[in-house]
Image 1 (tube, rainbow, N blue to C red):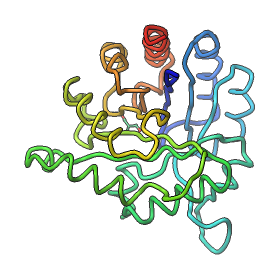
Image 2: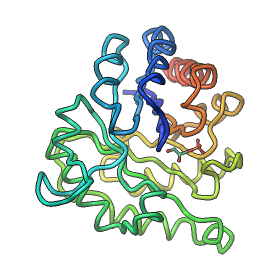
Image 3: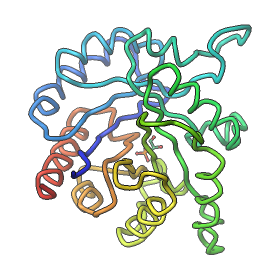
Image 4: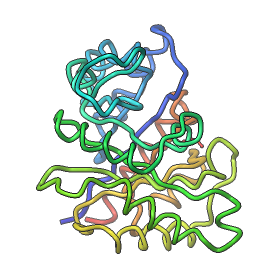
Length: 249
Ligand SMILES: O=C[C@H](O)COP(=O)(O)O
């Protein structure tokens, strides 16, 4: 059974209420696409985004969650709260969280477990730095991140992996297609259920490189940052995902 492409937009710390018009702008492309579309707005917009996205068959997700269900954690948001606001997914372990907030693999795993327990699909991010790649350590780094970040017993519950080389995020630098395919195949070889787990690529995915990246056999979708902020950029990426999904049928 082919894996359906998942095209996910991560708005990061961008977006005010007026920007949710984006969902209506991409709605027809998303509804027509033979690919799943997920938008992860800031938490302030999540509930309204879920309401508007539902009309177009677009899913919404959080950008992070706390590992606890509730409690004295000022400023944090639990997975159950995201679910309550209408989210179906949550990104955990994004390199900006790992770097800016000191989140290590154990914390990421706890968050992924909390997501699963709340009924969310965790999108677990891994990626090497430029220094690690230049030292030829990328596979060792990713293997360690996977071993440390993935929940051990998740039964039949879905999770998604996002491979995001840190040096490609927001830089306009994209990994070479053969390097992306090699890393995705490596990641797949380390997964307990390789055939059914979707592995997204993230890092400067743009309309002009989306077809190439999404056409790689082990790339099951994209996690898009900057190009998910403008409908004119994101629609061609959805359409590329849709085309490549159909080619695999
Ligand atoms: O979560 C998204 C990634 O960090 C990629 O961001 P970018 O497309 O702006 O490089």
